[in-house]
Structure formats: structure tokens, C-alpha cells
Image (cartoon, rainbow, N blue to C red; front, side, top):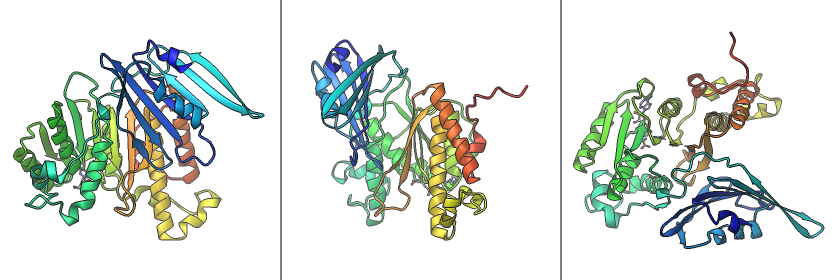
Length: 391
Ligand SMILES: C[S@@+](CC[C@H](N)C(=O)[O-])C[C@H]1O[C@@H](n2cnc3c(N)ncnc32)[C@H](O)[C@@H]1O
């Protein structure tokens, strides 16, 4: 049934859900784009904590062999979206019998730019191939070896480069904003690999510390990254003059992460990669008398209060983005063994429908009421509401 449905499609996104009990993989998304050379197919597997992207495969002819095994072996449901229509397939098991129901539905996905496209490229830096760059970035020693103190940073950069999933979404340059850039290890690496790939990428890094801004400006000059600029200002003071494709904010301290997310929203960022740092804002607001009864023991000790505050902050930030049209997830981006700051908020604007946005907004409001606390981001955005404005 998938094969005839896809026979005239130019692109598809197939989301497999309802895994069997105990399955490690919770969801699989297979996306494909058809071109003169055949289908480029990308598969992403999501566990509860992490997302994995398989290398892109090329298929000439029918793309359904990339999809059917997931339905036959693992998942009970798949939604296949194409620009023309959706196909929903549900498999149920009754009395040892497999029943399959199939529904053709109106198309639900409105944005197709970037599906399975350029973003499938696996990018990475190696001391063997990129020594001069890594030395200039201060990650490698003069003889091209990764500095022991920078090994974790190097691992993080490569992890994020591989998962940056960039797609050219218009004919203009690919615009990257790095908020709280510090020494801009990731964004300068991204510029370097994009330039190598012939992408017209532009980077603007923002940091409140003049010293790191001067450092980044001089590294960019040394590397001839002419489209990389840096300014010394507070993220919250930035007045955006244009939209951006990718907003990065790695370990921007405390509420600077909220300012970065608000900036991304203002700049209509198509993607955001945000690794939060220390969280104080929500923690300070948590009071034993205002949290749910069952959560009170978590406020007894500093460490549990801290972890609870972190999880609430990032879950609320994620759901705020969801209520504003983004698909957003929290994932582990580097093993805890390397850093305690190992959560990555990954968001992509997919212009989700109004009903979903309202549901997420309601969930954010319910969380704020239940916990008596909210992240700074809440005061910087307006959540959708189905209540008519007061006249
Ligand atoms: C922990 S460092 C992270 C640097 C870099 N993003 C990285 O991951 O390597 C945090 C950086 O954010 C900057 N910062 C903190 N709050 C800021 C704000 N409100 N506006 C601009 N920069 C800020 C600091 O100056 C510092 O360089």
C-alpha cells in the first residue's frame, strides 16, 4: 500500500510510532526527496534520550523498501506525509490475527524545504585533515594534536556538527546566529565546514565579553572566514534586523538561554540548537507550599532541588517553543561522563497547526500553575490562547 501511494510523490516524511513494549527505539522518521538521480533517503531513530541519524541512502525507483520493514517488524502505526496527501496505516493484533487499517487524508505538512536534503551530510573534523583549522581554533596544539583540556569540547563540536542537519531553505545565504558565543568553537567549525562545502554561510556571534569577541574576530580573520562577524552586547539587547536559519546558544548562562530562545523566536529561526547552562530562575521560585504534594520531598536537598529545577525549566522552554509552531525535543548530546551540562534542546520550525499549538500552550500554563514557577522565557513571549482578547 505504501508503494503505490509514493509512486508519484516528489518527497515524503514517514513517522513510525507505537513501538512494542520495552522497545528502545520510540519513534523512527524516514524522509525522502526524489530527484533525477533517484531518492535520497534519511532515517532518524529516536530513543527516549537520544536521536540517531543513519547515513543517507540513495534508492532508484520505488522508495518503499526503506519504509516497510519498520512497519512489518517494529511499529504499529505510520503516518506517511507527501505534498499531495497523507497516508495513515494502523496495525492491530487480535486473536493472533494482524489487521491493518489504511486511511488517505488531506496533506498535513505545509513545509517541504530541506526534507532529507543537504542536512543528510555527515560532517566532522579530524586532526589529520583539519589540523590548521583546529590549531587556529585553539583546540589542537601546534603539532596538530587535540589538547587534552579540549578533548570534550572537540567531541561536542563533532557531535553537533554531525547533527546540525542544515538545509538551504531559500536562495539567500545560510544565516547562523551564535548567542553567548564565547570562543565560538561550534559556530566557527560550522562556518569552516560549510565554506568547504561551498555553502554561502554567514555567522554572527554575540557575547557580552569583549575579550572573547576580539578573540573570535581575530580567529575568523586568520581563517579567512570573511562572513563571520562578532559583536559585544548582551543577547537581550540585540535588535534583530533580519531572520536567521540557525540559532545556536551553547551553555549561555542561566537566563541568557531564555534571552537566546527569545531572540531565535524574534529572528524567526528555522532551527535552534540550545544547550542550557546553569539554571537558577525556576529553582529560586520553587516553594514547598506551592509545588504538588508528591514533589515536596524533592525540595529537601540542594541536589534534588537543582535537578528538579533544571528539568522543569527545560521542559517548559521546550513546550513554549512547541506552542509557537516548533517541533522541539530535549536530548542527551554528549555522555554524562564528559559533562554534566549534557542536555540539548533541538527545535525546528514546522509551522504546526493551531490546535496543537493551543494544546502545548495549555500544558505550559498548567505546569506553571502546578509548580508555581516559570522560566524567564515565559515573560518574553506571548503564548497562543483561545480566549478572546479583553476589549
Ligand atoms: C559558558 S560560556 C559558553 C561559550 C560558548 N557558547 C561555548 O559553548 O563554548 C557562556 C558565554 O555566554 C556569555 N554570556 C552570558 N550571558 C550573556 C548575555 N546575557 N549576553 C551575551 N553573552 C552572555 C559569556 O560571556 C560567555 O562567553
